[in-house]
Image 1 (cartoon, rainbow over the protein chains, first blue to last red):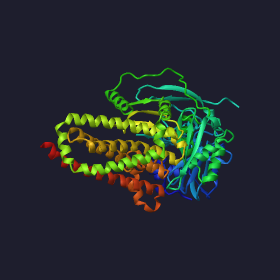
Image 2: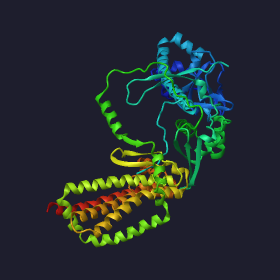
Image 3: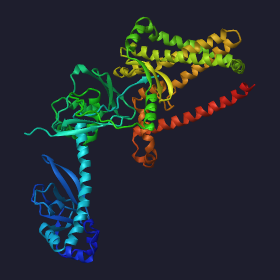
Length: 172
Length: 408
């Protein structure tokens, strides 16, 4: 199965690459068809690859308690996820599941390491884009953390003396 | 299990350029937290009548902190769950089963309101971890903003009002709340109205006389209106006492940050029934009706001259003041509005309407999705706009009629 070059250009990770570089990268990608509901990887699984979404939707969630996960984000065509797996063999930080039938392309860590060693100029461009994405996602995580902390604080009574909507009747 | 992690919080005071840092246990944020109401002796809950929009409200009074909250049915459901035995997670599940939806924001906001009113155990005042960090300098705009804010919040109040009102009530104020007293005022007003019609034939002459004594006229009218306004507010407060409820305070403030106004805080009347609230609402305007009637009757008996003209003018102004107070559609929370809001059991009608206005065009585009409460709010809004316009036009006409007289 061949990846469409037009699609690859839409992936932010590869937007700095020229035609030859894209060809080099596309030769290393492995297709993965995932039916709706199937798990692509689970939280705490070993990390080994990054995935690009060509078609469908993938939900990223993190376990909270019992049967409850919190949805962190949803990815669709042109997005990618699992990027920590390119650098770190540690456990996955979240679970990825297909929301609908999806077509993904996997880039394994070993293949990525080969790009870095054999084509360092391509590797540098990809790494630059990855850092940008890391920054965006970190910002988003900070926002989520802020909301969660705010919830916890307000729900358990910690708050500065804000003027809450009290009820009164001043007859004039 | 390891100790909960520590969170450091930075807070800023309004109007100040510094900050303080506090430290709390993150473990307090666990969903296993079990909110608990204070003991039954420390709060009072009163179910309100069914509102015109089909909803039901409750008023919750924190006896410990003397604060009141208006609860909707969902918040009341949550309140019933906060018994110290159910965790937030269990409460959220029960909420979902009851209402078919899971609304974390509602739970969070309601809890925050309860903490603020001292109605949930365990409110934690943040203790500073470090000294207050103050930024250098203070902008001119900041100083001006604080000045405007202080002006808007300006108020004089007596928090011992309940004791004084109790004394006034016991020492004769109770007579005002006999049914006979009400009908006596109505009878006097009817006779005064007949007298006013007879005097109305001389109204242009009265206006001319008053225009020859502008300082005297203005001083007498202002003093009379101020005195009537104080008695009006006192009547609200004593009516509240007549129904066995507490007057939280009496004072003076700037209505909407602009209009100097006396007020009586009679929120406690929500712990009584709707009839009691209507009596409290009506007691104030009855003062103007009574005083205006006395002024009109005295004018009728007085000899022609400045005194008669002043009495006639004061009578008309007091009656007009009573009418304005009793008219519900003015965008202000005057007595007529309170009567309307209490009659339809929608005490937040004005605030809800003002909140709806920015979204009104969008809501009108989706007429089919408009709910009954919104229909009532839109109706209130339209009537207010029309009323204000009519009032302005009518008074422009009066001004136009008076000006030629003044210039003579």
